[in-house]
Length: 93
Image: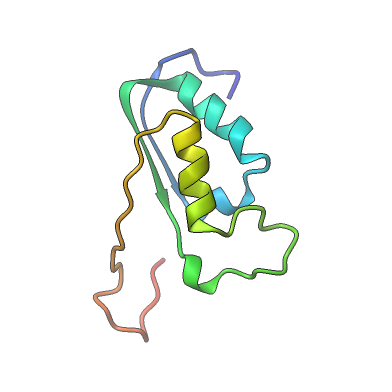
């Protein structure tokens, strides 16, 4: 994100994108650079249905992503959120 100034972004939200960021550490460094102090990064992830044997999916381990974020200096918290009201027949869009 070289077009963004240092400490210029309040919040970053990514839905189903963290899987493809390779190498993840470089993306986290850049996110850290552009986030303002006290800025927020939120990943929306659906780990249950990820293809594990697919070269396009570089990050499929929740634990490894959390660890990488901690190593990059992020304060990390996780929460399981139902986006479909708990009905397994529904899918989020």
